[in-house]
Length: 56
Image (cartoon, rainbow, N blue to C red):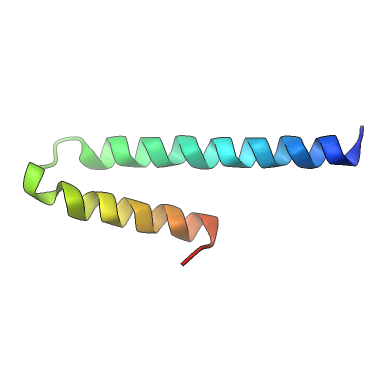
């Protein structure tokens, strides 16, 4: 198999996993959350996703 194709597939799969994880984290974090706390929950979820991706 072509190394370029493998790198492309790995990148697409990684981005897909991060995107799905982000959506699931947001969904489960916001479930049964009061509207006053949603901003804090989303901020914490975004910080968690940034930590997974390795960015500050």
